[in-house]
Image 1 (spheres, one colour):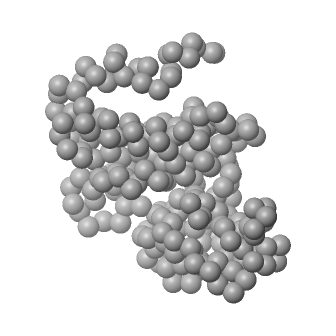
Image 2 (image 1 turned 135 degrees about the horizontal axis):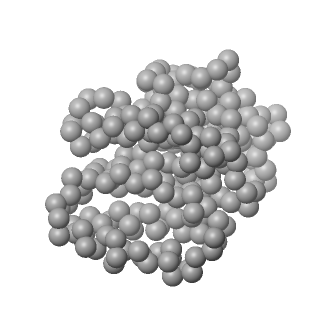
Length: 237
């Protein structure tokens, strides 16, 4: 199935499917998309495109910064050349926009089905975001979100927001990689220390960068006290 490019190019569907709705009131948006943007020719543009879409819809409705909640694409065994980690990171970066919320689903996808059957947990995580962002309830809605990385001796310390009760879902923490100046990533030993994770690897005695869950179908298990999974990321950004 290869539709004409004009059928799915940026803005191609807007006039037919979105513009007619802008005269109606809107309470907010739930968005679940991104897989088709994972190709090497499209993924590098996704951060800009996605944030532009959010800003443009808000401008079109003229109702201010209404809530825009979205689902980070889940784990799946995709083609080797597809850049699913890059799309996930672009989605995470959209959280800089006001009144946005992201449901992380890196732990509830189906490696062999791009349309995983577990929709209930996706909906529950979106509902948490809506309760907090739209209705002002004091509930924890995301899992740990990368904030910054600092240098340690032969290690890096990764700091997280929404990090109350950091925990590993399993016997040991997995999913972290570090790289030195050569940019070659190696699996890292990782330990939780308060609201941070310390990562190191003998293969990179002077690490300068770190990433987590950086694969289409990664093995990663960091969560907070509420059991909500951490978002994949790469840092420094």
